Image (cartoon, rainbow, N blue to C red; front, side, top):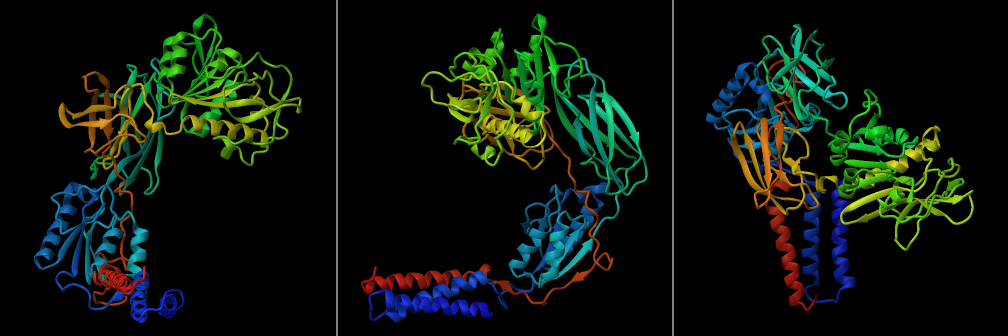
Amino acid sequence: MALFLGLAAAATLYAFRVYRRMEVRVPASGLLASLRAGALVLILLLLFDPRVPGSGASRDSARWVLLDASLSMTAAGGGAWREATTEAARLRGAGWRVMTFGGVPRPDTMLSHATAGATLLAPALRAVAEVGASDIVVVTDLRITDAVDVRAILARLPVRVSFRAVGGPVANAGVSGFRLDGPARTGRPVRVHVEVRAQDTRDSVTVEIREEDRLVGVRTVASPPRGLVRAVEMELPAPAAAGWVRYDARAKLPGDGFQPDDERVTYAAVDRAEGAVVLVSLDPGWEARALLPVLEQVTGLRGIGYVRVRGGRYLPIGRAEGRGGPEGAERVRAAAQSAALLVIEGSRGAPGWLLDAVSGAPGVLILATDPASAALGGVRTGTPRPGEWYVTPDVPPSPLAGELAGTNLAGLPPLSGLLPVSGTVRVQAPLRAQHAGSGPARPVLVLTTGAGRRRATALARGFWRWAVRAGADRNAYRRMWSGAAGWLLAEEAGRPSPDFRPLRRVWRRDEPIAWLPGPDSAAVTLTLARSDTVVLDTTVANGGARAPLTRALEPGTYTYRAADPAGRVLGEGRFDVSAYTDEMLPRRLEPATGRRDEARRGGGGGAPRPLRTLPWPYLFILVLLCGEWVGRRRSGLR
């Protein structure tokens, strides 16, 4: 109160000082100053937001029932939901107002079934408190997701709040995590990692893995302790076909009372490299083996590398691909054409399909070994210059300057075989080097753009020497390629892809679907179907700064088909909307005394409302400001 009074006095003095010292004196100066002071004090009062006694609603409209409409209420056959709706209907008949909560609070709504994927109680408590509630009854199974926020609100809320607990302990097991370890390849086994959790059960849990509709793995494990997970590693048979293959992991428990968390789905890109970093080395050296793991780490993408060997075949490299012998060009071609980031080392004897992939890819990192490979990045160079080339410690302005700022570039191992830039083409050079540490500085890494394409070209060899030395040298290597990869992958969601397809293959039930735009068409007719029933037929923009979005869908497997206005198919395939929810994960929020129905009370039993929720302060501010404006004009002031 003292702070408010002091600020209010300062605002009043300021208003009168303006009209007495800074404005032309007019007969109405005192009135105009009073109007401005009143508006300032009211605005200040809104910022302090006091509660106004006696401003609440009537007794009936000030009593609220908060009905939990989350999916956990449907556990064990929906007994908790039936009990909760019966109780809410009884109170509603007695004059109470009902608000369902879980996701977004919905006032005066009685849902026919629970659908929310989380139990968020705090927003509903704040909403009814601000409209003048005096009594709140929360009907819930006590599995509250935001329990910490709820406890903090109950500790300071000046409103009576009581909990009516429904339902009880439920035996349940679920799959909390499911992923494939490494890429999936035809002819090779697939390793998967499954995480299982359970509540209120001592029975063992059976994990079943299916590839499409084929059962490919079964494992029975002991039920993990409550709050912990049990990891299950399994090796599955080789995929039956190439392309996008659907895998699902399901936990089975006798008497399981909650099904939405029993299954997790993932898709394997068998013999495909979509969303991966693909490195193709035509002039093998040490750089590829040092660079690929770093690009995996800094981008978070899967890394696939190939080194060309005799006979037009390619030897896989990298941690996951180190197993197995040379492969044919078709597999490498498919990987290069669908990569998120393509890396090329050298260009000697490059096949046509690789040159097409380089020219069509939105972002390419080129490790140039001769003028022909530098030309792939749009850079004209002369023949390689021998000798030792030391990177200069200064960082020129470039898109990589922020990443390289603060990096110790002095004393890095020297580079070799530098290709000097020739011609008048303007390039951005994040790094430069000097021969033997003296003389003119020449670019060793250049960035070029054009026609919606980005290219980063390394014009020297020997960067790998930085990676093998721990400390500042390895840090410089990592930061340089991190900046280059980030620049090449910028705005990936808005880039054209080989076909129009979803950004991911698995989505949450409440999540809008984002799409990767395809080529050649400004608009796409998108058709989504589930079990041969069309659920969405719409036209979306193909391109732009943001990925096109479609509305959230119910859980299930969907097929999509995208076509241009002429009917030409731009993309088709499948994706899943997962039914999974963590609703059963939180412990039941028992009241402090351990009773199932406890009243909590804050500062008082009335129904005061915050000042900001009342209309009259805003009306008075408008009247005062408008009155001052009219008075100034009538007095000749601007």
